[in-house]
Length: 376
Image (tube, rainbow, N blue to C red; front, side, top):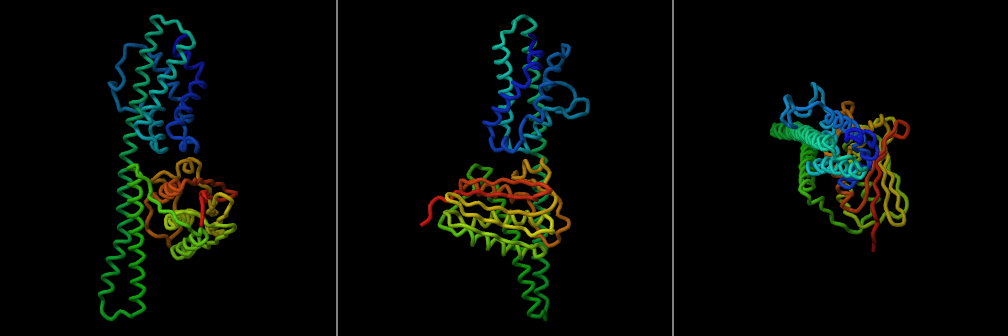
């Protein structure tokens, strides 16, 4: 059997092995459905067509035109490279997937007992060439996505820092005006504090993001903590920042745990900010904390339009935004798209898990599960 025919007849088996390998590289990404199944069959069909293409032709990477484009249209491999970037895969993982595909197909084909004649040898060469071409297209698109994300990150950072910085400058100039009433001075000082706090929060997010990218993870300092008080404190801060949103907290069970209370408050603040930005006001934002035997479960729920599934799959990745927030004029200026990423990192540092679900019927729910460990 020709190699191209073998791939076509055994595509489901090949895809299953490919997915299993991808799962070993990034199990969390695969768990949320960001898998190769959306493009794997298109990639394999393109490889079959490449194997069957009349020769001679130029080698992969030497053809005319831009890598990742086929007759002006993006190839399946290029789209796959973009998907893997959005799913948080690195270049080594992306390359490893294609190398694993090459090895898996050759192994399965050899196990089928093919006739290794001149045609079989030629098709093997063409298959390797096709894999190299697909990998080149995927890497080229991945690199463009990295560049685009970097530019977007810098643009958002510049925009979001400019707003509180401008407020600080204008308020400072206002305070130098002679004869300002005491009440107006107090209000101006409060504005200064809020703007400075917004800038501080952005800088803290940037430091946490950088530390995570360097492989150091988010630092936590655990101690006996009343999670009930942490939720209450985060809710009070959110009510001040988002006065037009109703917010409720429901706590039950024993909520003592050995956690980093300040870091957990940061998680709650990020989730409440996200709920206020992207949720509707037809129902209150609700925080529900439940103390179970060996764990603490916290849910932040808001009503409003459901988050699209393609966004929900990668919502904990940096620079992902759930939707537009033009309707909310009272929100703080920080909007780097790092909040949920850092929340996930903090929860992971505690040995816990955070998930998101969103439907039109039930609204959007972020669920945190933390191990209680021991308390004195």
